Image (cartoon, rainbow over the protein chains, first blue to last red):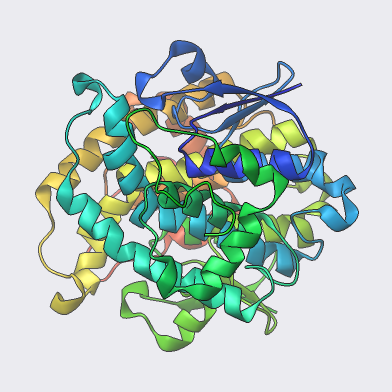
Length: 230
Length: 230
């Protein structure tokens, strides 16, 4: 029995949900607001970050990439053609590089700021850091987003999927971040047609569907967000 | 033939050097100043971060944890008792959680700031971000360091090595960060005797020795830095 402690608008959480979906694994989802520092959640992960995956009553498997490695070892390795991490060490390294790019670098330059300023601050109380968004953080993140969308476009143009010929963790990581930014209407799709093409393919995968129905209270999605053809 | 592009005062770079040392692998070391954005280096890693490991003339294996996974797959898996990543998925997840804690969380709360303000700024030209250190960044990092040393002390007290009964990537990651902070004289050892004990054991490992002879130009180490018994 798998349990995933997550936030619906956390890119790393969506990444793990996509992996579970692609592998046909059911997991119980527990919504966390990490800033509330719930004691039972801190016991699972002293860093108080999402996602945390738990199998049966085992220890917390903390973080998107760590959960992805765990799922590769316990599920992916038996998936043959549908495995999301390649077999060869050099190809695995490229998939991991890109996954960390989207969940690490892009997160620290773009996603984290836009999600914090535009979503989490709506959900936080004043003493938790809630309040009005910081316009300069939003501006900086938007400028950085252009470069990241250009990189996704370049990868999508030069390869069938972002890390090479096959769908991999790299696509799932990028699509997780992009899906949240797209909810917020932050992505200028007309500037990056190859990225748009790739994202349409991602969006039509069954594992992706649940995201299209999710809503932030008080913040409706961009009009095209739930559309498969946009 | 392995080549490691690194900076001697980058914790993630030292982490990969410790792995290579523990496994008895020789690698050619290429010093990089990532902020110079050398074109040949950018071609290996568009994020312009160290470390980058290269095997023969293969692609860049980018980042401390990605290199560690690669070395586990190509070397560690054949090391039996000396393997630095456990065999069982749940134990591997705990080692990865701690490795990311020290190379990720501790880096973004402590190490990155102290290294940038106190070392990199000495090496950077003014147009690269060089100049006098930012006192408020240093102050914040020092306050955070106390919590991280307390956590290392707590782990060292409750387990034989930081992740469990055996030496693992978690110890190498923590020791890499701590060794740089110790060079800078930032660690209050008397406050954390269990952490000190653990660090003395790390320091006496042959793989660790090269660090003790390294010097930053214009910034001598804390007096006890090279001493095995301090």
